Image (cartoon, rainbow, N blue to C red; front, top):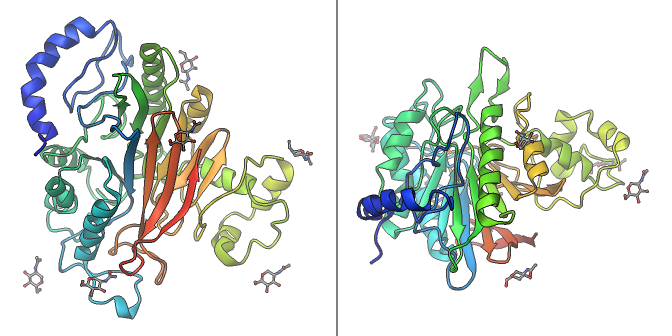
Length: 403
Ligand SMILES: *[C@@H]1O[C@H](CO)[C@@H](O)[C@H](O)[C@H]1NC(C)=O
Ligand SMILES: *[C@@H]1O[C@H](CO)[C@@H](O)[C@H](O)[C@H]1NC(C)=O
Ligand SMILES: *[C@@H]1O[C@H](CO)[C@@H](O)[C@H](O)[C@H]1NC(C)=O
Ligand SMILES: *[C@@H]1O[C@H](CO)[C@@H](O)[C@H](O)[C@H]1NC(C)=O
Ligand SMILES: *[C@@H]1O[C@H](CO)[C@@H](O)[C@H](O)[C@H]1NC(C)=O
Ligand SMILES: *[C@@H]1O[C@H](CO)[C@@H](O)[C@H](O)[C@H]1NC(C)=O
């Protein structure tokens, strides 16, 4: 049996404190989990991402991440499902649990990232217990996982601190609340270390918030400029430490506004009939879309996956995409939020991807299987991704692609 990260924390805490003192100039220590990025001189100056003994490139040279988006877990057995076929009854949250258990077994991920709307606040008897029930299969299987929140995890109160603290009690949770001066709770970064002790990949997790009422009425929240600056500085500190740019994948809940621009840019040149098929909602939501295509000659390649609904991003932009594109380390950005979109589309060097809805209590599309995205990180910097479907027990893999 392997040791849970939490136990490792206790054992390594003293050693790590000593190591921190001696290795601080190198910028890297084999640290225990749950340590916020070390603060360096001055406010808003951050060190490289955290490390954790669980986040190591396996001997086969492939670190497997599974993204689980929009489970909308609630009270378990008594919670009903949405958008399923009559022959899929009976159905409850326990079907989401069964899917998670099955995919853990099939995919054998090294890490699971829950990208928000993990639980639904409204009608939830106990949100902390609900999140714990959702993550139970990982704690049972001994697989580390990370959580960030969406707009449904805390609808009516700011329960992020309570949920984060609850999750951090779990033995296999690598969730941290992140630097306390940053907007939100749950913005943090880790590196996946190679066998040689050098970072092979970085993982960035952003709390993209929920709703904004006073500042920008009628908009979802967005990743704020202080979080963008944190990313910029964390990424630069990692480059300095590693002596090279370290490739990265990033996760949050709500898509960036650039998802829409990218999708439009990458429409085929002959896409004139966008009011039908998988682009129906696109046609309704983004009437300016074709105008943009005509004005900008901006194809970056093709979209893989489906667009069954609009991109429900914030109305305003905190600048994360442009910061990432200028840094040039993030290869893939992963979101949930729009359950029946599951595409990846390239944009200025970054693949903008959706996980596709996972949970049965969440809205979906009857007959369109719930799914999870697998993201394989290779030691040579290549990312390989595909989706696995809850296709009536078959767990079919679709849309394999590498970049
Ligand atoms: C489920 O609902 C039944 C009937 O309302 C109730 O007796 C039971 O306690 C509920 N169970 C849970 C786990 O909420
Ligand atoms: C949920 O699980 C039950 C019991 O295994 C099964 O009969 C039902 O078909 C499942 N529904 C879905 C949507 O997976
Ligand atoms: C667009 O698609 C609809 C539905 O498939 C079809 O009826 C219509 O003829 C198409 N229009 C054009 C211009 O191809
Ligand atoms: C669009 O860009 C492509 C590739 O750079 C180029 O071949 C093509 O001529 C451009 N089209 C227009 C209309 O500018
Ligand atoms: C990132 O940091 C560099 C160096 O300090 C700076 O030039 C750049 O403007 C920063 N970018 C953002 C988006 O903060
Ligand atoms: C990286 O490694 C993978 C797995 O061995 C391989 O499929 C891929 O072609 C390699 N990519 C590069 C750029 O060498």
